[in-house]
Image (cartoon, rainbow, N blue to C red):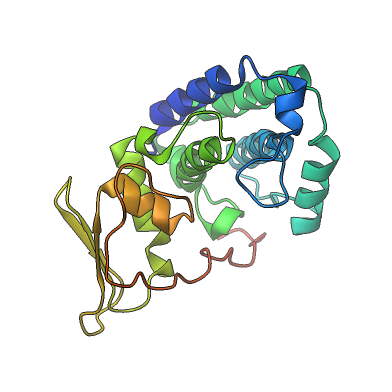
Length: 236
């Protein structure tokens, strides 16, 4: 599958415009994520770009490396250490690592997208889709004006595909604006959740839909975010 590189680059430009006028005070203010300031969100987005660039650069040489040698503890430590940067420092680091990531993707050929990476034990193409989700979902968390109704429709549909595993078996989703339906497994029909595709994606992602309410008699409890499988470091 050809990854949506152009769409992710467009998301990057949107993110850059979003934070262009951010002040130091705004960086220090709370984000929509409990316990995280806007600086934490920006630190995560920046390091996420660095990590994906690292994976891509090695994958293009036929090498497998861990996203983080120190695992989730290293990831969390980097976010905590860099969250209190000034607004200017956040913008500069975000731009630098985003440019590095986009440059690595620009070197990829059609055959390169199927190269294995340790992220979710998937391939290089999967990291492009992951960055697409990260950029748009966390732009909402910054609470600077981007909302789920700003998400591209195809990003919303992809997010539903990715997060469908959070649904209880038998639950059906109906996106009334695009005429698509989703269900998990083949259990007996259960709750049908009907809304716009962006609303459904926002709900599955744990973000508040804003176009129209997600409608169901009783919304089912969602399962956990899809887990990362153990990272593989062997060559397939």
